[in-house]
Image 1 (tube, rainbow, N blue to C red):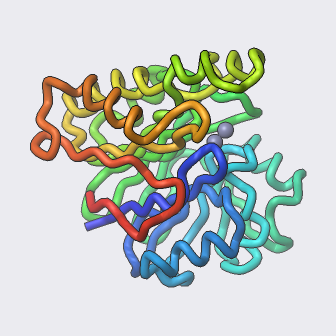
Image 2: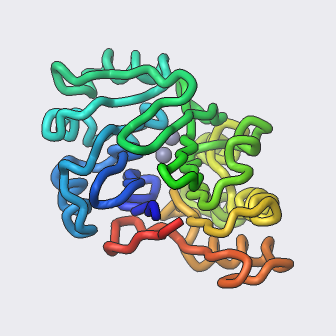
Length: 260
Ligand SMILES: [Zn+2]
Ligand SMILES: [Zn+2]
């Protein structure tokens, strides 16, 4: 069975490990190398288990530690073409690091990954759908302003989805951010709100998804309890712990993982 370890998840830094202590991949490296290595260690994952690093986009909460992590691990970095260009231009990859453009299906260790476009306020951004050796599917999907048909198609049929639940619309509206930042977050190319996450979650569960992890929660405009409540309310016609399991990804790992 494959597992996902949501190592870091918030607007301050993101990284997940998908696989097992024998081998797997990192999705994003948005915290310092030191903290990321510490988190892997806390989860019992040896550094040698990391077989590739897949980057969703070039915002610093996803690539902050990338240069040092690539220097330390010496594994290839995968990203979409324009994202890769920005990583190279921004010197976010260690010298000699193998940079691989995501096109179609990519094999890393005993897993296959495909990127799917997400609508977000940067040059290019994507989520990843991952198929394990035993035919299980999971996806990591954060940093999107709204749910497009492409996103929906990529997530349908996944056993597990790590899905953004970034903000509560009322907390955002009444919160401390300047108006232009509020607009950016709530825009079609910003982040996914709790109600939007709940609506998509209901479609996914109806289509057979059994495990949901809510992630990339804003620390200013959301709380874990509120995200969980909004999404479970949207899932009222399904049985929690029967039809589906729901977790909220911690800001920093507690060592927990979810098997799928
Ligand atoms: Zn972003
Ligand atoms: Zn982000």
